[in-house]
Length: 308
Image (cartoon, rainbow, N blue to C red; front, side, top):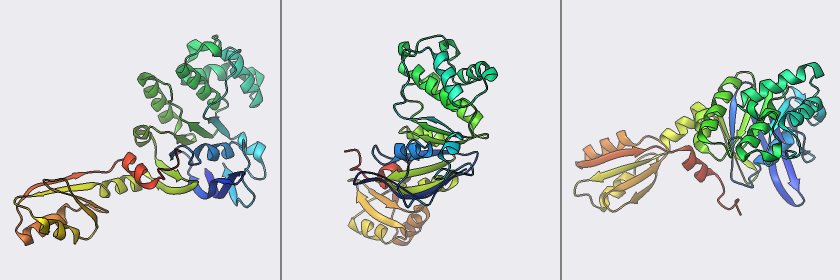
């Protein structure tokens, strides 16, 4: 379980996180989404104790440990694969993981078995004796993930974990998350929204340092179902059709594409359109829906100016 209340973090005069609050239940996989510069990586670095929050932050709890009071103990609960993870190119994979295991307090008699376990989990056992500097980007990502899994921490923070992986490796990663989801609390930050839709139980979206969406799968799926577009085409339709459609409850906008009308709203409009067509004696030649996607929801809720 992760609990965050009124977390703020500034870099000089710029507020990267502005009093954000969210929870991640135990055993869930939460997609942490947002444009570049929105505050995702800053949040993850606070949760690993790499960064301290601003004074006034009320609560940051990691598996029952108060990170504000006991950051060393809290960070032992977390395994992290963060963006631009530095890996020492002069070391072999086994040497790097051995040193990381010692830093994480793993007993010397257990280190070899633990290294083998995590390398098998990420399908990189064949790279054990290879120099990190000789590895491809995909292999380096897998070694970073193996490092995060050392010691079997209850919380995993994964920042763009499939970057540089080929399709087979991505499929293996999804299988790994399926195996881990019931024993760990996982936050997955990714720009691959299709991946988030497939893997995650929850979505937490951040924009300009503020949380703009925090919902479980049932809630965000329902949001997508009702927030798509509906296309209507009427035989011998006139401008009166657009006027009539605009009066329907739940319609926020009516646009024309030349041959018909496109409605945007907050609910399924097909029944209302059918009833209106019967009353007006319209002959419908098309009535179709185009459900929203996580990508369209992302574009709707986040600030387009953040990338710059």
